[in-house]
Length: 307
Image (cartoon, rainbow, N blue to C red; front, top):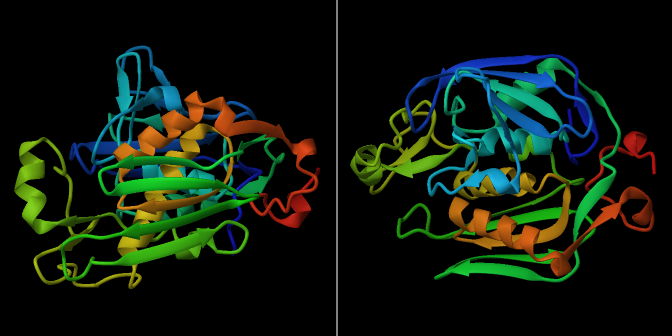
């Protein structure tokens, strides 16, 4: 089943998943429910008094170097990027997401379990989003030798490049074009990864308490420690693109742009979406009827296009 491009899908049933948080190590119960069009993606902390809501939007982004966190008032949710990527990749822009604790379950470290559960719950064609976040001019953010550059386009194209001082990660790239490539098959299964040498430092910082070979690709000085190996030869670059998709979806609308990233992480992703949201001359919110002459590769299959 081809599951891209991402727009105009509505969740039919409820998703229930359980696991452990990657960073907190705490048990995590997650329920995803359908929401009315225009509601957006809203997290609800069922474990806190008053069951506070946290909207998945730019204003709620709480900087975390190792993951994306959202905060509204005193309530916070961590490691939201894989689920947000799954929702965006399937074209689901409205959902109620209930949590039993501060962090989403990491599951196998990719977006694939979320995608599989959402597909099992059932999707139906919904209304194409009435507006899109269309880039008008090139935009770039940079920190040292890491950068992300966006150029105007009529679809969403993601290109991720990474370099590490490691024999297995010296140069990897992956490109994904919505409307041409299969999200569920080519992007969603890419797992998060980490270096064995960083384990002690991360745990001392209160991070990666739930990390294991079951939910992350772990690399020592020379090899992959996971007995099953990699799912893709360039799985690391694919996962970087997956994280980028999840973070970009915090714009709240489908983005039309060609995005190139080099050695970027969540911190730079957050800088980018804040820049886009604060500099209106770089983009405009366009209505569907203004885009009739565009290819609209980002829009769902032809039978969903009701322009």
